[in-house]
Amino acid sequence: MFLASQGLGSMHYIIIASLVLIISFFFGELSKKTSVPSVLMLIILGIIGSVTIRSFSPGFDFDIFNDPLELLGTVGLIMIVLEAALELKLDKDKVGPITKAFFIALIGLLASTWLTALVLHKFYPEMTTLQTWIYATPLSILSSAIIIPSVLDLRHDKKEFHIYESTFSDILGIMLFFYLKAQTSDSVGGIGSMASYLLETVVLIVVSFIVSYVLLVIFQNIKSSVKLFLLIAVLLLLYAVGKLMGQSSLIVILVFGLIIANMKLFFAGPLKQFLNKDAAHDIYHGLHVVTMETAFVVRTFFFVIFGITIQFGDLLSMRVAGISLILLAIIYVVRVIILGVGVGKDMVPQLFIAPRGLITVLLFTQIPAAMVFDQFGEGILLYIIIFTSIIMTIAMIWDKRRANAAIRGAESIPVNEVKWRLPQG
Image (cartoon, rainbow, N blue to C red; front, side, top):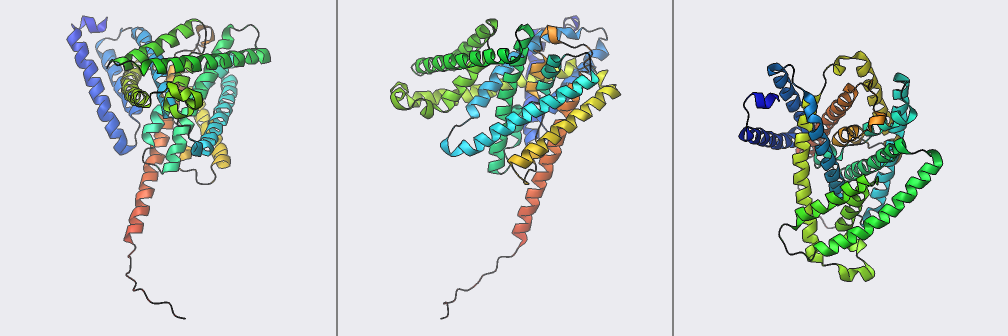
């Protein structure tokens, strides 16, 4: 290996990993001030690392990063779904916003996936319909990992909408992708296959609820101070076992997160006696912190390694650039239509907050070998991620300046003192 040939030992690896995490932290702080997504900075950091490696060792085998990327991707996927579930508060007064965000996310996902699949089939006629949908789905999923930290300064209703929409987009997109993935080994297909998948999903949801209730009841009674990582280990185990059995085991993670984030709703009536509120709340808050911290570490190394493994040849292809431009147009045309119907005229900056990120890359790494299309320009993936992030950044900066200008305008209006007079008559 290149690193070993340069005399790097374990201490060097620790130094490199620590520096990457420290830099990533400052990227996050810089992102809050500039609205530039930290994901872009991490990818650029990875590209700089790639250029450095290529300069010192032209024959370096970048395939050694494939396994770490897949492992980070799997853990990242679980952490993102859990983190998204923990953000979903199913309060009664939120029924309207949640329902609206759900349908906007669902329709946006399906419309974007369908149109993207048509474009891919046009440019790559050798691809099967199933292949085009498998490739189109990741490109159509919003990145909650980018959106949620980026919208904290927006008006409350807009911030709330983006949190719900991006969360639903992640969850629905992942479910759609794994349904399509299951079709690669399904000999039935069509309506029968969909009915079978829905039935299996319903059964899995029921089992997930039972498992989640049991887990929460057990862990709220554990007094050890290390039970949070024990709980995460159990969830990872359930996910891995479910995947080996061919099940969409992310549903277990999703259901557990929903139950613990909305324990008053799910532990109502006779079930209330099984809930220790203080202990359960401690688990929720601790799990929220651990999930965010873990997601930060996973996201950091994932995007840096992703940047290292980028093949620059595709980026120079006019064909790849042209396809990417068309797909970008689809993203925002679909968004204009669904937001125009669902939100109305006040759709700025929501219209431009549609970045693709971690989920998109993660799902691309999980495309089945039988469905891999070698002629697909992987530069499309990078173009979509970079330009949706840049467009969001410009929109956020513009919106912040507009809001600040409105505040300064309001503050500049003099407030006159008016003496109160007794009404006449």
